[in-house]
Length: 305
Ligand SMILES: NC(=O)c1ccc[n+]([C@@H]2O[C@H](COP(=O)([O-])OP(=O)(O)OC[C@H]3O[C@@H](n4cnc5c(N)ncnc54)[C@H](OP(=O)(O)O)[C@@H]3O)[C@@H](O)[C@H]2O)c1
Image (cartoon, rainbow, N blue to C red; front, side, top):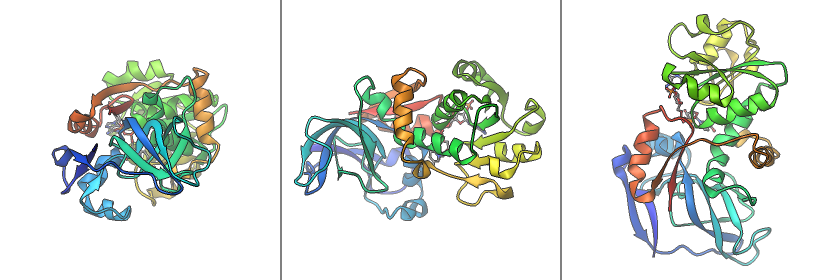
């Protein structure tokens, strides 16, 4: 037997159940991964809450839960390329990552993803990279962030924000991040100047902003427009495909093919750290979701298996 987190009706954390399920087997062209850590993202519990959202991904109940995972390949079917039993791997498996075993094609087929975990990177960190790391990278690429920019990042202390702040700093930008006042020390530690989110944001932002990335909705994007930033230099990852004012939209799926390698290099080179806000054993997956769904987490929430 194997365990998997599943839900049989839509709702909040209370609908998530850890069940014993038959052990999945790797078929031709597939690997099976013994998952050790799953990273949580708002998308995961967004799908659990909303049948409409789930339907956009072809999901209906009963469904598995989670996307980001890290672990070890423990079965490889015939025809697998580039991966073998014993390899440390991480990746994304739509609606089935929070489980003892995940089966996916190798090489992976979108929307799934599969990468080798380099020595020197923990499973805990690897399990945070596919969604949050790639989304931050895609956001900064979309606005062409470069040395000398001053970038305003909305929701800068969250799962995507901790990557965006550090990647922007590494690119040579001055970074101003929005957060609650109690979060300012955390943001400064990451390398950003801090301003409070909420009404009147544009009036609080220091002069000279040249680009913006909104990681929470549209407040930061709209403030940047108000400050005269050109719409093509403003992106949001959290407002659907058609944000207002000509602002751009992107997501992790749009990240370039080289971005994961760059993230891994930055982590290995200790130029990028991944703050883990909390780690829960899988038996407490509901608590993990409730914490993240409160939307005041600093960094990533992970679940161990
Ligand atoms: N399109 C994609 O591919 C993609 C991928 C990943 C994420 N997303 C979306 O991007 C968003 C961010 O994801 P995430 O993982 O970073 O979320 P998260 O970790 O839950 O974000 C938490 C952060 O949001 C901040 N926050 C709370 N209320 C805020 C407000 N009113 N204004 C600005 N910031 C506020 C909090 O700061 P304080 O603690 O200081 O309050 C906290 O640090 C989500 O909507 C997610 O669905 C999209």
